[in-house]
Image 1 (tube, helix red, strand yellow):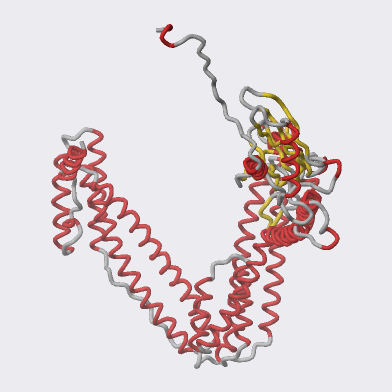
Image 2: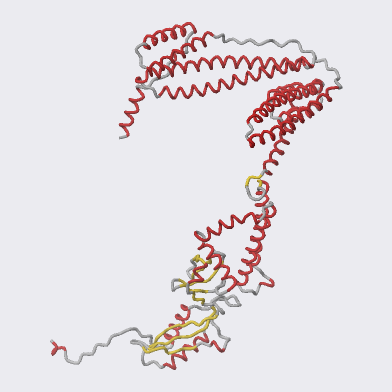
Length: 604
């Protein structure tokens, strides 16, 4: 199947149309002939074509006409040479001329980039045409040729602009030395007056915009039209004032640039700030004077000034951005507030963990406290510190807890549906901690499934470590709702029942005496110093094969105060087995006696 698709793909592409370079890669004379011949050919076809085909043919004729016009254009570009610049006025005039040409240069670059994107799209489109799309394919080829030739012309223009700009900047740089600079005491006054006019324009603009809003609300068409006209006039006036301020500031800059004084960088910074504040497009002007300052004052000083200003701009921008509200809670929460929140929370969380570990491993006044007490104090203090830290962190970033009412309400709905089990376990954990019905260190048995020691009681779940050293995580609600046998609820002392049997005919008194005496002399660990809990041997029954006894002995379920574990069931069973063997007391096993009343011969 894959082979079939591959063959179909190759067949389809074999009929695809490639880009015909003959439409644009030739001399202008030959291209003119090709375009004329194609125009004559399709003009003959047009008479017999239907309406849809006529539209395509007319479009093709239009493209051929544009191509003919394009190749007849003169590709050479000439720019006026810069005249002698000897005064500040003539220098500023030439700067304006430079800005105008630079704008044309940028437009040419943008046009070249746009045309390049169109050429890429046409390349993909032409590759999809086949012989069945002859007219459309030729039209696409002609359009491709038009864009290609146009970009060729634009590339020539761009190179010419770049070379001219390079010479222009060099001429402006060389002219600085020959500038005749006279003290202009009125310059500062002119700048202040222009800036005052600019501020007044801004105030008037605000008033007109406010009036326009009122007119729009009241649907006063005549008023809206009149105010729009005023806004246009005001904008034109504003542009003139901005332009005037910009070039007055340049006039202020030039003496410092000529004399290579460091005050130039401060004035240049003011110029850039003004350009940024009013949103005017004088980037080319700023770049021009950066070039002049580097070449005139020196790369090191200019780079240091630019780097310093850039660094300060980055700091100001970063500080502004991290203080901007990004989360719509209360008055808004900024990135800085989020960082502050996490720092406070991490600090408080670290203190809570330190507290929990310190209490869990406490010595001194808590040394003699039970593990359950330590766990309760550790958990309660830990969660209290975490909640306190969370609340304090929210307040520190300016979030009013009352603004979280909606979130809490939504959370309540979630609790009512999907989170009820989690909340049930959480509440059960709190009850277990305070009620102390199950504590850390208790040995518990759940539903006859497993038995183990409680090692952790957390808010959601508890951890039980079985005697096979398997940790089982149990939801707290399970401990609250199911029957749980707590073998060490009131204390750690419990009675161990060790069953054994002897043969019939053995003296019961002898068995009891032998076991108790041997137990007293043994190394087994059990409770010996409590008269109410002395070991006993009970006869529990007479079975089919043995007389059944049970050794009752009290032990500590957990490690005793001396840090020693009591003997277990296996230890006592081994002790009884050895004791019975040592005293020649028979340990019975099931057996069957067969009594035959008649001789075997009679039966047969």
